[in-house]
Length: 389
Ligand code: C2E
Ligand code: MG
Ligand code: MG
Image 1 (tube, rainbow, N blue to C red):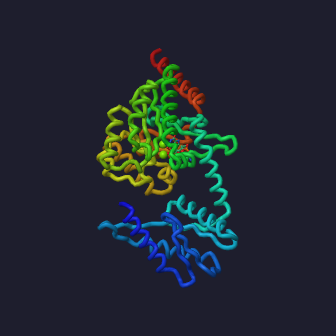
Image 2 (cartoon, rainbow, N blue to C red):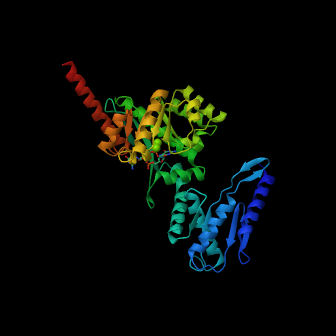
Image 3 (tube, rainbow, N blue to C red):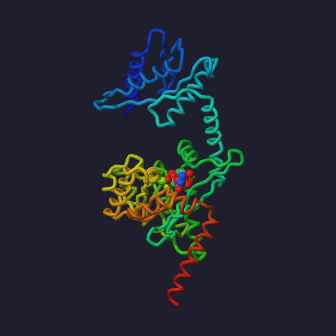
């Protein structure tokens, strides 16, 4: 909304912070949208936490700017002198580290400094430093997890999941390096690599005589909405010879908004003939309007609902409703994170079409998956032979 409006907001926040400061406290703006609140004579952590709570409270009061109403939010990091830093720069660095931890925990909250946070920040820094090189030099790999059709008990698809095993950092979790690659602008090359590798693999399996299966690839919401994304998919299909209807793009709910640009991306992808799945369904900000307007093929029910579906009736009812809704909308449902036979039985009873989870198979590398697919093909052939005899 422009610098002028930004300045007005900063002034208002400064005023609010000053309104809760006592005559011994000191408030300053450090840079950009960062403020520093110095509180003297603190006897325990509770006092600092109380100040932080009051800051969150005053800042979150609605504000009107250019005739529009906003509800500001902030994250707060707390550091204590002298425990967390004996000089100014160490103390501010500690507060900064806790601030980032507060942001990571979902924002709009405060975090007290702990030495582990510095270790975490250093780890993140090392991940960040090495990731660029890893993506550029093909040091990532893909593993594949089977998706099983309940009716036939057969693998009808696999989900490709990225892995990064760094010589010094060890196995870095995908949630960690995907978020980092989004932050440092590496999500585009990473997605290009994942899409191409997965499509090449699917084509190679078919060329090796294995039955056609669906290949699902995760796409970060930030890149899904990039203007180059549709042409990347088109190019990858061309270059790899992948059959469009055998490629499924999984995107989480945050990309599922119904603004015109987004609708266009969905429509253009559908024109290419690829399948679209909404990942982690039910955990984000999905709206029924998006299901009305967007052409999706499949909803993936998040593990969050499955975890307690056997003990919490509410979870079971929600899963049943999602499956029913999908059936009526002619979307497929995939339940992800199935870990036990009991969960599988319950999902079967509720009419879920496809299941995925450790109960059926953990993600494995391409060679291992080739063996699994070949075994399945042999078993099917064996049954057919039996039937024809
Ligand atoms: P996701 O797409 O929802 O993938 C499912 C995650 O659940 C995977 O974790 C998988 O290993 C795990 N999982 C599957 N079955 C079970 C189960 O029965 N129990 C448990 N506890 N976990 C199960 P993973 O591989 O760590 O990936 C985490 C997330 O990172 C993925 O969630 C996806 O959002 C993201 N991700 C992974 N690879 C890529 C990629 O190439 N590109 C993008 N954009 N995101 C990726
Ligand atoms: Mg997924
Ligand atoms: Mg998921």
